[in-house]
Image (cartoon, rainbow, N blue to C red; front, side, top):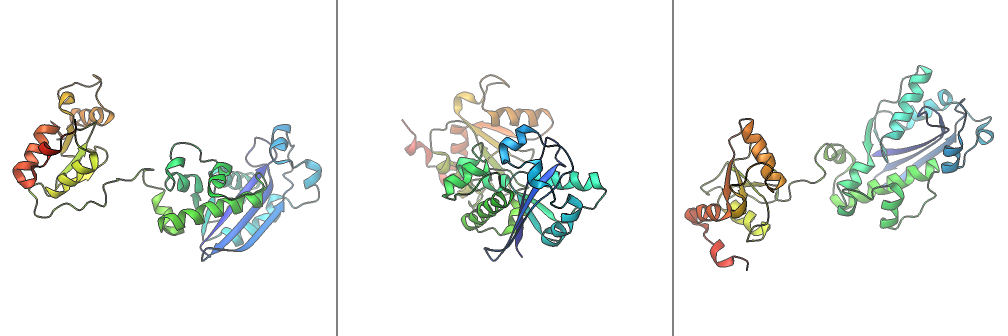
Length: 293
């Protein structure tokens, strides 16, 4: 099995009050097993939660308690990757186990919100609710039913795998990285360039396109990064921004570089003209003829 997805519904604002669990299991991109059970939380229901999922105390009466369904969670999730849309479901399972003095399933938890944010640009900073993402992908489902939500999370993960080429294990690593990866990571620095081993970051509105500037820098041997770190060697800023001090309408990258410099980092902040002239001296003097009006 490649991964399983899980969703739970709760009776009240206590995460341990699980009243429904749905699990969907996937192998080679296909749904191979699904399981759902109502659960008697042995706790009161509140109106707010009932209004979300429609499950009542009468509906779960006679259904198993959480300790009685836990063996199924160990069977379906144990030893593998368990994905859920937000880690609330992980929290609920762990809280329910803690309440009853039981061991939770030993699995690797994967948040499909983090997956979506790293796959689709429209979901990076908002709009990553399960219903919103699925609507954008053309997938219809009965929201706030545990099994339906588990399968919807599975659909999101499968589509992300298809879009990126990463498998479930690859996504376990990818979600540990920033939402936005270095967009210049595919640029290979010229091994014969004069600046091999140095890293440059561009900031602000330059008089050439950022992609053009990045390519020229790579041609000169630079590694090009999106954001400054303590290992950055050069930050290139617009000419009129070079001599501004911290807080004087400088870009966020400029401010961050100044903070690093204040802490002892060796970052050189140069204006674009000087930088491109320096690159020109190393054999790539192209900027003057392409300056934007």
